Image (cartoon, rainbow over all chains, first blue to last red; front, side, top):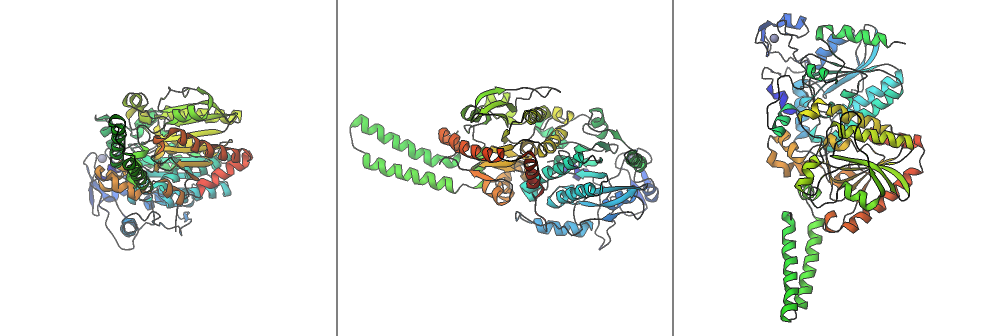
Length: 283
Length: 314
Ligand SMILES: [Zn+2]
């Protein structure tokens, strides 16, 4: 229901690059303009700075490879369950074509990549969502990947780390998409019972069914600065209440103030923070 | 109040009534004509109600006269006692909860509550709950677990409320917490979709051992209107969205989401309340008896397995 928030990022130009999986939110070239402060940034500098604007601290949206690279120990990531594929269970008009198209342009199989990795030597099961794949919506494959990731963590007795970014449900999978909320939350109840740690990281933007399921169930919940976090997207709220929302409504800082997240961590310090949390839970 | 597709039927019924009046007032015998029209009316009703389109079902599911959670509480249970509040913020009138006795057994009952008219709907916020509603539901479920009472939920909501207060108080977290807690609850849970089941706001009362659904109820990832505006940027294509979303009871049974379709009287649940209550009663008693035979471990495992297997991948 919050899907329009993704369309506001006019600077996004994702270009098909054949089989190369590396995609950029930032247009190719030497320079890029920060969408918040309009500063012209040198691309190489920006990349070195974890895609955070040096001037205003704007956190550019990342794709899944960038996130994994910035988070885990080099070479430690092993993908799991790559064989899961998206089907069209409702025979929804044009859904199969849309999936094929998005797979082609993003080089991704689905809106999540999950696997095992280490962070400063701490083993973790990790799942990272990508908003470029049908707005990070949660269909059967996303729900199944998350459930398997959690179950694998229970089997190996290790923590779970999930990075969320999502517009909510995958409309084209109808009720089956809705049921992924129950599936992922039920898997977390098992993790809970097993006494294992779940760290949830909200990144910009996370709304809808992902906020109303696993992402809000972390033992520790982290948000990136400025991330939009909510159940209903701002546009729908504005239409419902017929007034403009105040500046900063549903942003990470607002959510922390309202008790919904434990901490807001700058991307440059995120890896260190995660390592510290993980080591505090080592037995 | 009449739905579009009910209109020819109502016209026919009016004609029959008119002929009956003529017979009485003028002493002319119209019995043959009346019998003919009555047959025609019955056939028409059967024809309409056995060929309802998904969009027509949406309209029946939202019918103002359709029995709501409170009606079922009064008709099926005795000793109903409403319990209020989440102990954290407030009481949400969009969700009704309390204690009752069903076939002699104490139960906890929780349901979204829509009104039958505008005044009731304003008071109940059209059955669209705030976080405090879901947290009240959770408190009552935990209480049921403590005292070993089965939980019966009625689902009847267009969705969770979309407002500022709801976001400030953590609408997402409130729904998520319910899904997680229900999946592990140590007592039987039966959820019955009695009208409109919309999005996470409906699912927050739906992680049950058995999900029953009335014949003309709907259960969907979002309202057809919202789906149309998300998918095609055109809220007026709700009818097309209703077709595509697979939201009827038949669809949900086929997709493995619900356990049983509860028949409704010809003409829909609102057309014959006594029959509607007894049809729901029969199924509820049967499923509850079955669940009461199960051990705690079986109940929890069975519920987990049910939701774990939902979804389709290649
Ligand atoms: Zn900037």
